Length: 455
Image (tube, rainbow, N blue to C red; front, side):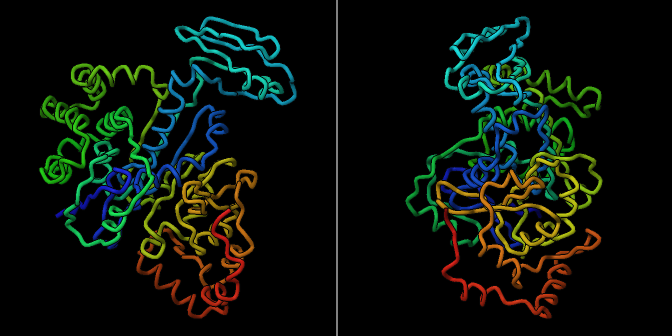
């Protein structure tokens, strides 16, 4: 029987407990907050916006917080209303000091100097901000009003199909969290829920949830007949953890599917469901949504074999697997070498882990690595890796680099990328035992004053 153990985290988003690992998937402080702070905010979005496309690999997609947070960030900050107040730079030429022609759909306007100016597109009136122009006065900038944002391609990988199917329905922004009668014993959850916190109750816009639902149903029609998934989605005890509107849309799809949906009719079927059952507010949001060319590709199975067969190179990789000590197969030297081959030159890997073993594996694979700084907590809370050293904002301290040379820095090995976790853990334990390196505990004691957690 499939086990599903949800709970509300402190920011009003749903977290999950794993009985297999006896651990929680998400920070009890805030599942959605964690996704934003560790996987979205560290990205240099303005640099990414200059690309024609953005390719994201989301490893251990789970219930989708990292991908949904990324899309939600774009929706909230770069929708048509937001774009009407800002003009983003594309195709920058540093050699020209003049701002070049701005191309709209049917209009070509020549800017003069750095004066504040109104720019009219098809139905949009953009007021050029004088400060932005002054900041850009050394650039030759061409802007295409109808293609101002890059296309987005997300490949989401997870070995748990049920959680992936549930991802569009997961509730966020719940403000009235009552005492939770948890069906599992995990003290840390109740501990955080009883503490005072300034964390905001953020919410994933249901436009994002609908977008993912539509693409998941289209590419995974088996969702309509998956009994384990349906039993959880419609169980009374889980009702409060799911978005009612998205669940209602899916119910309409279920009721109108017929016995079989031929592949050639799936898109037209969803199109009809959309216009018949989706509320006007969703339709209006999707019409102005600039990410109308988002491709979401869900792949369920072992991430190692899936990525081995993948021919893409990515701009951003989210690595959100369980802790290395419990799931080392996705933290090995060989796995990072595989990710190196699938990362663009200016691409980045983001992970919550600061483990010396995974940082050592990354560096051995020729990555430049650094810290992820959390402004709210005023400390480093993750790791960023890239082929391009210029993309590393917070480099590792001498203390951090020294820690990689201790026994803690001995990385996991998975030579053929198919070993079981137990075998990988056993091999590393043997290597640590026979190593001549200084222990991490001894190193920490002798370098206690050098340790640096914050800026």
